[in-house]
Length: 573
Image 1 (cartoon, rainbow, N blue to C red):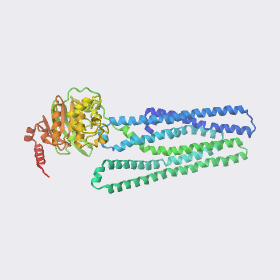
Image 2: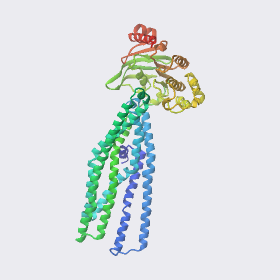
Image 3: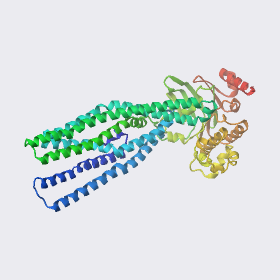
Image 4: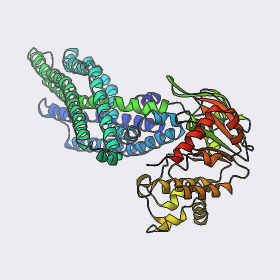
C-alpha cells in the first residue's frame, strides 16, 4: 500500500509511511466515534427496558471511552498534521534535488514560473489533502465494510436501508469523476497560464512601457482573468451538482430506517432498542459520508498537481559515473543535435580543442556555436556522434565530475539578489575574501565595485538589476576566474563591454590560460585573429578550421565573415 500511496499522491517514501500511520489512526478514531452511541444504547436499555446497572459502571465506562477517544484523537492529530509539514518540506527538497539532476533541455521546454508553482502551490495542495482528506478518505473504506457487515448481519432489512442509499450516493460522485477532473485540470492550467503571463509582464515592464503596450497587455490579462473566473465557476458547479445529488440520495438512509424500522417494531420483528441503534448508526454513517464527499472533491482537484509532480520525477536525468579527468583535450566527431526533432541545429560538427590552446568558434548568428558550447559543458546531451574529454565520452561522465573542470561564461548572465562578494564566490564557495577580490581585479571589476555604497557587500538586486550590462558581464567573468577550472568556455563575453574593458579582460585571461583548454565565441573577429585555432561553423557543420591566415586562403565563409566585420566597423550613424 505504501508504494500505491507514493504513486497516487506523489508522496516521498517517508510521507507514504506517515500517511499509512495517519490512515490507521483515522480508522480507530472513526470506530471510536460509535462508542458514545453504544453507551447511549446501554442507558436506554436500563431506563426503558428496565435492565438496571450500577452508576459506577457508567462512570467507569464513560471515563474509559473518553480517555480512549482523546488518546486516539491525539495520535491522529500528530500523524495527520505534524507529519504533514515534515512531508511538505521533504517533498519540496526531493523535487529540488530532482530538478538539479535534470539537463538544461528540460528547463528550455518548461516555464520557470510553472516549476515554481509546482514546488510551492502544488506541494501545498498535497499538504492540505494529507492533513484533511487522504487519511480520512482511505480509512473510511476500511471501516465502512466492517460496519456494513455488522449492520446487515444483525438485521439485513434495516442494514440495507442504511447501506444502500450511502453506496448509491457515493456511486454518483464516482461516476462524475472524469468530468470533475477534466474541468479542474482546465482551471489548473489556466491559473498556470495567468501566472506565466503576469511574470512575463513584470520581467518585461521596461519594454512594454517603451513600446506603449500597456493597454494591450492590460486587455489581454483581463481576458485571461475572465477566462479563469469562468473556468472556476464551471469547476465549482461541476463539483457541487454531484455532491448535492448524492447528499439528497444519502438523506434517504435515515428516512428509510425510520419508516421500515417503525413498521418492523409495530409488527414485533424488532425492539425499540434495535430501532434506535440503527437510527443512530444511520446518523453516524451519514455524518462520516458527508465529510468523505467533500474529501473526494479535494482529491479530484489534486490530480493535475500530482501529474505535474510525477512528470518531474519521471523526467530523464543525465547519468554518468564519477571520473578522474587528467587531460583536457576535447574532441567532437560528427556531432548532431536538435532542441526538437523538427529543427536540427548541428548536422555533423567535427573539430579538436586542445589543452594549452585557445580555440575560437565563428559563424553567422544561429549557426550552432552556442549549442556546441552547451554540449561540451553537458548542459545538453548530443544526439549523434561523440564528444570526448581525456578520451572519455562525456555522456559517460557524471555532470558533477565534469562541472568541476569547467568554467563557463555565457552571453546571458545570471546573478543573484545578494552581495557582489557572494555572487563572485559562487565560483568557489571556499574562496577567501582576498581571493574573491583578486578575481574581481583580474576581471576589471574592482573599479566599479569601489564606487558602490557598500563596496563588495553591496546587494545588486534581482539578476543584478542595479548594474549595467558590462558590469554584470565582468562579475560573471570574475566568477569563472575564481573557479580557475582547466577548461574555460567563453560565449560572447565582449558583447556588453566597451573596447577598453574588453582589452583589459583579454589581458587578464592571457595570464590564466596556460595549461588550460579555452574555447571562445566572438563576433568581433579582430579579437580572435591570433588564437591557436579558429573553427568555422556554417549551417550546423564544420566548414573549415585553422589559423586566421590559413582560413583566409581556404574558407569562403570565413572571408565573408571578415569582410562583413570590416564593414560593420566602418559603419557610421
